[in-house]
Length: 293
Image (cartoon, rainbow, N blue to C red; front, side, top):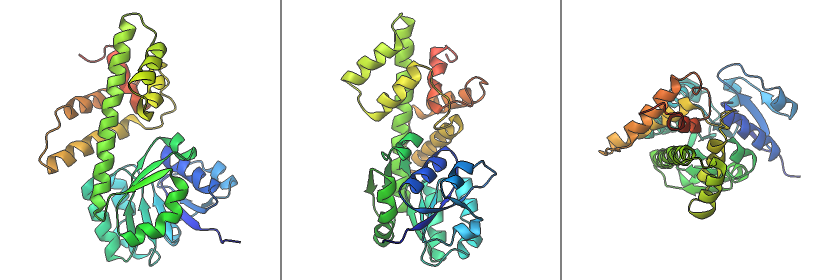
């Protein structure tokens, strides 16, 4: 009988919690740690083990899904990494800036800990249904060793090379396109609804003809039916991503003309008590409800 692999998961937001369930379903022994108190009884019942951060860093593979640069840089600081198991590999699935990814890669190398930048593409449902996509960057050796985990938690992954910042940049590019899609769906729905057309009929036509991808087929019905709760991806994280995208473009000497418009949409939604706690696709309501000019 093949011995089960024990892995650690750090970060239990909506994505991290979904990943914890996926890891358990795929037969891994799982240690979990979260920065703040959280109800994890369902994971414990399924066999997960709650541990301290120092213990979580003792497994061969440590996965993380943290909310932003600050959280990732804090948790994976030099002192914590110094106590990690020698030769362990950190699979960082968070959406971070290219600069933060480079900083983390340097810290891990200095402490003899493997590091793979591996941002994920998909909502929590993509994780639990086995349809998650992952972009990975790091040393060939680390990626090869981590394949035993990566292939169990994803439908497909792309290796974009040894430069860790490349994976972050690709993920930001994907999210930038996706945010445009959310706003395009929202404006289109507002347009046809204003003329008396049913939003669901319109989305059926739209996704049957020109736009059959997961963004339109997944988010379209959510927008048409105002089904924004529970939030699979928060409004706050949407703004974080737009800010990361703008910063990345600036470092590359690029100006993204629509980025400021999208930034304003998220900022407006976050001060609206009816929208701030909903899924990020609820930016569509700003156009639909004529809350922007």
